Image 1: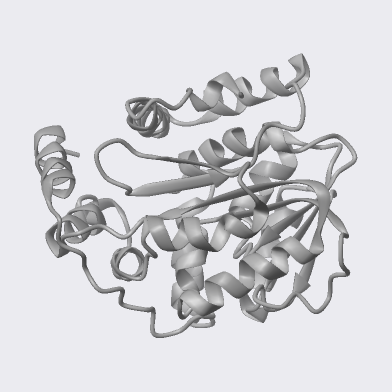
Image 2: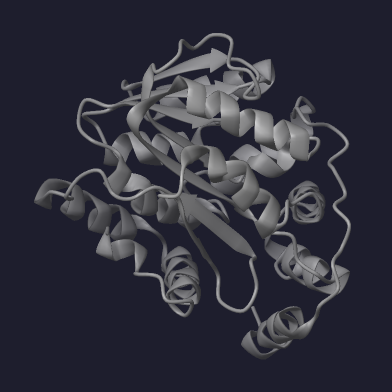
Length: 292
């Protein structure tokens, strides 16, 4: 990644007042085998996004208490869910996805890694018919809200999540924010086209174009009350995180496991993790490795 080129795009984003129209994805539910495979491979142990799943796992860890029931909305192939379950072995996780084929991939991911504190459900995250009111302690959703067709579906998903969440529950939501220039979207999607599949590159660009604005995300999450805090990457909302305050103090065992998982990343993955962490810290946010 060229830092000068990236900074040029980000500064242009920061200075621009224009707004791009959202381009919803053609299919809200991923069922095409080639897409599922490309997505699953990107987050596998040696995948291009493995470091990002660890980043979100560390960011969300202070919200998850031992003994909690934790809901992962639109869990996909379970690469993110796997990391969260490994980092929080005393919690029970429920992964929900609307795609039967994606859940098949998720089961394979969990079985291959011998993770036993996860169950999977096929359901629509806008209604969650399989879950009772006030039945989960924490709700998570990473990099999936942009798959929703429109703002109404986003708002309905947040209301439904509020319904199944216990009163003292925690919330961690992370997704792309809508950028202001097509050139910036293309830059991020194609910057590493030489080390990712063509299918992944196309899906990445579609995801950036389908991102909701920061304002739309903030309005939808207002249902959780005024304790939700928003953070994002410096200069432009390439990534937006909305979460409630910590629900526990991180113990030494979890902290040690977090650093061990970080050390297990390849040199390139650690570089990407650390650079992304700096990008968040540049906006005044604490390091993910601080586990605060």
